[in-house]
Structure formats: C-alpha cells, structure tokens
Length: 395
Image (tube, rainbow, N blue to C red; front, side, top):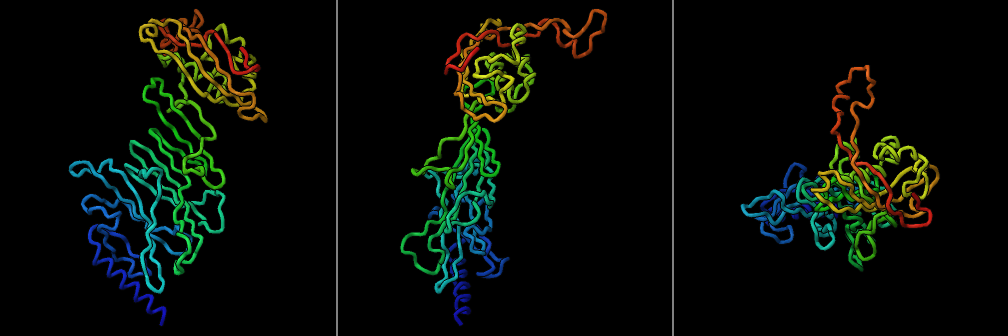
C-alpha cells in the first residue's frame, strides 16, 4: 500500500510540475511517469524570465551514485540584443526526483568561483572516475563539464552527501555538488586523466608563445581551502602550436632562443641548428648556460623570455639580445628543479646561408638546394653575454 501511495504521489508531482512550468523541456524519469513524456520548465531556473533562458542540454546521469539517473540541465542566460544566444554564458542545475513519503524534486546548484559560468559556446558533459582521493560519503565518479568557444572552461565536480538518505531530514545541510577544479583558458585546455594542462596566450606575443600550466590534484581536489585553484605543479613558456621547424622560418630572434632550449629534450640535433657555426663544436658537451652539459639534459622548461622588439634593427638583421630563464632535468634519474633555474642573456645574430651548402662544384643542385641561396637569413644564438641563477649555471 505504501509503495502504491508513493507511486501515486510521484505521478501527482509530475502533473503539478507540468501545470506550473511551461517553456522548455526535461525528459521525465521512468520512475515518475512514462520515459517518453516531457516535463516543461518555465521559471524554475533561478527565477529568470523564460524569454531570457535557453536550455541547451539535458542529460541523464547518476551523479549521486544512488542507482538512479538525475537530470543535469545546462542553460544559457543573458543573451545579447535580439535576443542573440551566440556566446551567451551557460550555467547548470542538477534535478533529482526523490521518492519519499512526500515525493519532491531536489535541486542542486553547480557552484563556480565568484559565480562564474560554465561555457559560452558548445558544452560537453562526462561522468568519469578520475581516481582521486575520496571519503565514504562521496560518489565514485566525477562530473566533468567542458565549455568551448572563445573562452575555454573546464569544471570538475563530485557529489557528496553525509546523510545518504534523502528521506531523512539532515541535521546539517547536504553538501551536494562540490567543485574540485575550475580552469579557464584563452587558447585550449587538455586533460589526461586527472592531469589538466591549461594553455594561455598573452596579449602581445608575436612568436606564438603561450604559458603552459600543469595542474595535478592534491587531497582529492585542485582547490585550496579558500576555494581558489592551487598553484600549478609546473609552469613554462612553450610554442602554442608546436616547435618551429627551422631557424630560417622566423623573423623573430627570441623564437630561436626558446626553440633551442625546448628542442634539447626533443631532438638535440635539431637544437644544434639554432647555434651559430662557431658554437656548434661545443655541442653537445657545452652547458650553454645550464647546470649540466646539454648531452645530459632530458627536458628543459623555459620559465620566462624577455626581449625588446625593434622593427628597424630586426629588419636590418642587427644583433639582438634575448634573456631566458630555464630549468633543466637530467636524462636519467634526475629531478625537475634539483639544481634550480638558470637565467641566460644571449646575443642573437644574423646568419646567412651559403649557396647550396651540400653541393659539390660538379653536382647539379637539387630543387631543395636551389631554394637555399644567398639571401636566406636566420637568427642564431651567437654568444652568451651573462649567466645567473646559481653556482652550477655555466657557459
């Protein structure tokens, strides 16, 4: 009898929701009524006017680990004049149909830092076990919401409930969805399991350099006790779209310096190409400002790069100065940051390729050799002017 009353109560609740809410649609849970019917929404979402709310995704997921799917509703708000929904911000709510003595819909908000939003373009949702630390009151999988568009966003949540019985009134408020990590980027966000890599470009950066930050969870979260994102486990300057192929491809001297150090951990012979011919005999036993010979470098992280652009001098290929701060990791068994970073100030000079450098006088030049004639100009590392950062940093 009690079971019948509960089912009737849920059906009446569904009917009441249909009467009260009339704009956008939610799929009904099979436990409430037939799964092919709809529940209409109106001003359920933060009491906003229905004309200025647009539901973009409704997804069924078992977020709270109770064996029953909830409704995750993602909606856009604050459209531009028109209304125009392109680029409008997106927020979300989680609805749970609770079957107790008095059936009800429980609403959980998706918190964000400073009440920020989840997306301003396409949005995707996954439920995944990131193998983070968790207590017995936490669900076994994390809710991951990725927002694309001009601004890239990634939010990671976990459902936690100390009561674990929705039919018993808790003595303290249920915690609901906890924000474990919130990441924002103007370039891209990459994720490999629990590791999150955030790429950001600066406003004025002609060499297509970007700041790359690697985040790892600690204690089951990426946030500190104040609700702010913890400092990245690693941060460096890298090329936004991959390492440059050749020194001759760029008119920017700083690009050659950064490429030299980053290539040390990828292709040492390629790194050698960024040195002037008089420095190449020192390769690979030379240190080039690092605390160990480059032959022993397994990876290099560029912390910073500084230079003063001068269009006239660069076009005339006059010598330029570029300063980088680099942290090197040994090839075998070394720890990143053991010797500490080194700051190196370089003189970068113009190098002019000879005519067909691989051609003998009696050979006919190939098409590739014909392209490398006198006039091919390259920025190459010519001289270390100053090294600082520690006693091991050396020329």
